[in-house]
Amino acid sequence: MGSIDSANIMETTIDSKRVFDGLILHIDHITNRLPNGKTAPREIARHVGASAVVPVDAEGNVWLVRQFRAPIDKVLLEVPAGKLDAKDEDRLLAAKRELKEETGLTAGSWTHLADIVTTPGFSDELISLYLARDLSFGQSHPDDDEFLNVVRMPLTDLVAMIARGEVPDSKTICAVLLAEKVIHG
Image (cartoon, rainbow, N blue to C red):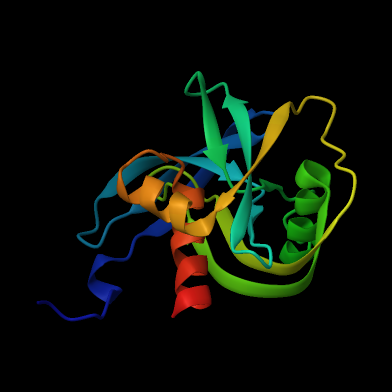
């Protein structure tokens, strides 16, 4: 195994140009100087970031949402999540907002599980993952363009679904497996 020092593989950005401004993504074309002195083009999808929540009730059930995802033309089972309103938004506050909007739940106990980069080959999206416990129930308020079904199931069943490859959403897989580790050791 090689050295953990990464200085010999670092790239330096020498030029950057915004080529697209969208609703969710902004695309930059950059030029990087490589460790060997040559240059290479890179394309980066810039994303404001997001927070995701694994809400687990006192009975060991996890609360999820099923929603249509246009980029893959499928309905997915996911943990409640949503993008930040701004890059500098407090990620825990965003998680609390999304949990309430999508499920109507609020939580008395919050645990930060991890921050994950979803697709570092082309995007800078960072999602903060949280475990929410000590749940209280209220009315959900999804965004106007958000149609979803709330699903409640035992956390152990969801972990088994993940193990069988039945849950393709990466943030859900990461968040649920980390939450299960915190809850069951």
